[in-house]
Length: 398
Image (cartoon, rainbow, N blue to C red; front, side, top):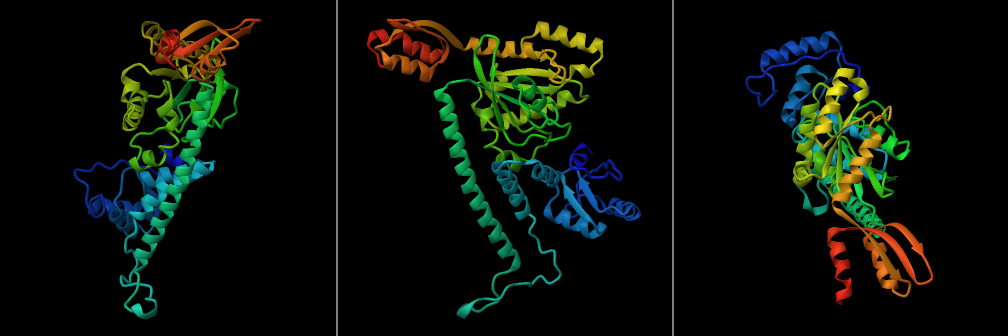
């Protein structure tokens, strides 16, 4: 029901239906369809939401049987996404997913199956059928949207390359929808991203700079929330939005630790990340878990969680609302980045401008002091670039 409430629908009733086997024509058996028909008519229900995937035929037959609008889980999520998307990119991604969903539902739902448009000129014949025309128009629109999204991806790639010239590592927040990512993002960055207590409050990626305890700067990215059984069409459509996750050096998985199903939610998030090809991030230490909403736990539960965190290095208990534990999370991110980064104290003559420029383009300048002879730098470099710098005196080119 949370999905339905997320789009301000009034819930007239909810029922769990056990199915021995799904019926190809109506999903439910004939008796259950008739039983629900009476319930729908008695309560004057205008919309029925099925928390499952419906085929176009099943959706059409149920609408005919119940004389009301019927949508499935994917259709409902698309409605929510359409309501939440703010940027041009977000709206294009929603429309692309919606058109793909709509195209599969172009069935002959009218009475006159021969409905057609007339031919033109000397070609004669009955002309193009309405379904074919609708499908062609949808295909044309899908093609245009994909071209526009390619432009967005290229622009985002240019922005990413520009950020790499000022090489701050990217840290991406991911998590189940309504886990508190945007609240945590605002707490860590001082931003004012919409952080309402509702599903899919964030659909468009937001980036802000953050200074870690060591003085190192990072770029923090807030991303779309995940959900169980996220339709694959939506994962594909929002791949551009999730590119910041693919590029991130560290992924912070924000979990609503107070939710009774938080373990299942964790597995759902891991499933989507694996679909994106991020197995390595999950399995090899690029992920930190932020156990959010500890302010909603009892003191006993908070103590147990803290004891676990002290034994393990992956979980950080915190409350994005109160700020408790947020400094611990920043310190954990700092430590994790330091594990893969070498800090060098270097002195480079002012005349060696090429080396200074290379250090600025490949490393993170933590400190700089200039005197009459040299530029004294404290630089953070990844392992590969530190090795390249070490060989500069042997005559190798940077």
